[in-house]
Length: 112
Picture (cartoon, helix red, strand yellow):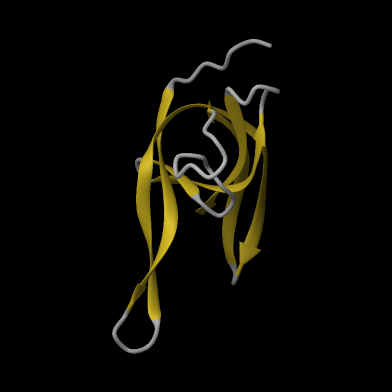
């Protein structure tokens, strides 16, 4: 198996709920750390949400492995940030039997 070309720096973020002082909460995103990654587009589609066209592109993002339970191991519903771009992680799988690399399947949505 050929080693991935980890040439893009992404920030792994996790949702965090903060009390709003009125019995509710506000959701924010907390940075967990940086990952060098190989990012490849897989497929794309456009759909309409409330009359606004939204483009969705699916990506395969490969990063170095991290043990189960580590805060640096990506998980579904977390996201990667690259500047203003956001990649929502849908699934994570070991890329190789030894767990040296992880493959994250992610989506990027952009309103047109």
